[in-house]
Amino acid sequence: MFADAQKKPETIADYRREANRLVAQFLREPPKDDEPLFYDKRLLQTANWFLNSHERWSKSTIRRFAAALTQEVQMLASVGEFDDSPSQSEKPLLWRLKHDRPRPVPKIQKSKKGKQVVHQKRAATRKLRKKPRKSIPLKELRSLEAFLRLKADGFSLWIAGYVLIASRLGWRPGEIGSLKRDGNFIRAEAEKCSNDRGLTDSCEINISAYTERSRLFKGEDVLSRLDKWIADTRKWEAYYGGVAELRDNINARLDTACKKLKIKRVCTYTLRHFAIACMKASGFSRSEIAVIVNHATNRTAGEHYGRRRFGRKRAKKMLGFDPARLLLVRNKARIFRRDPAKKKKDAEGKGAEVSNLSSLDVDTSLGIGSMGG
Image (tube, rainbow, N blue to C red; front, side, top):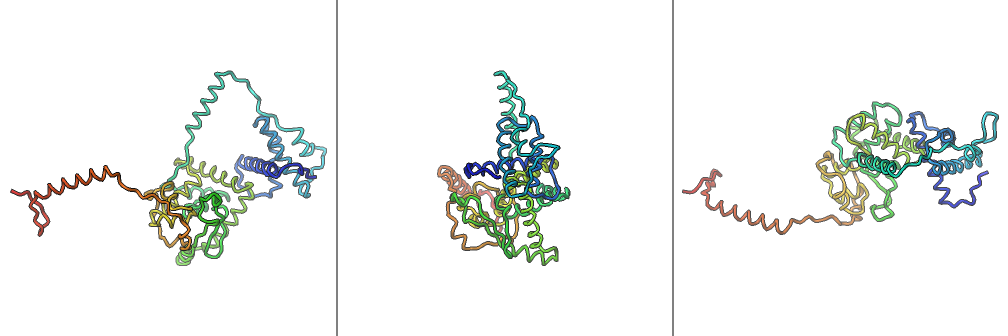
């Protein structure tokens, strides 16, 4: 039976997150492109993989993972999804998680000098790690999308669709992952709306212009393609064990693709910066951008996100929004004023230029100036 009545809800939630982390790690090694399995199958495969992975984790990490897996396996057994009766070939899984855990990494006693060397190596590794960038040229973005489509596995094709959508909407990764379509509107539950940084509790965009464009060129219906991508999103989210784990796997695939293409590292937030840069290049005002990307103020995108010169100009009608939302945007954008000293210096220089021009005999009919005699 499932005997977690003494555990606090916070402890149960922590163990659930640890188990999902371990499942995601199992699925990444090696990357699997098969059809997603149900949660119980993935969990049991992860538990067996964990028990056979010796000298990989520290003793405390093994103890934490074993407790998390035990909780989840007990939950499956309590609802009849898993039969852990003993067999002749091996001990029950729950017994192994308690009494036959993997061997921890051997603890090696290091000297003081050895510890300093290890610390220096770790510090050097942190410095060498490339940070994700805030801009990407359009040519590299297209090559990245093409590379993912050529991979032809289900997850890579889905990420190619993610790149296409995220580079246009500019929503946060968690919001892109929770897309829902309602007619010509796509909506998502907004992140960061509880800490007064989000405009409303939901993101919303009207994509009727994309629908009309697809009908004009007689291509495949954009709405049906979007519905399929949304359905695949739910599938991959269940496969990897949650939104956070799915985002980690997206970034891992993007990192691998960038290494293959020999371009700087791109992550999910790079696409958000690129989309906002395109909005600036397309002529959207600060408040309009705040409405589209669900910022509470018109200052955030203008000062902390993609620059206009890195974006691509697009038709403004492609991103429709409710004008009533503009009234909710707080006006906190800075008004950049010139330095008074510099302004005075420029005025003095302009006065000197005018005095020099007064010595010129200008022929106004031809517009040519000649020196006076």
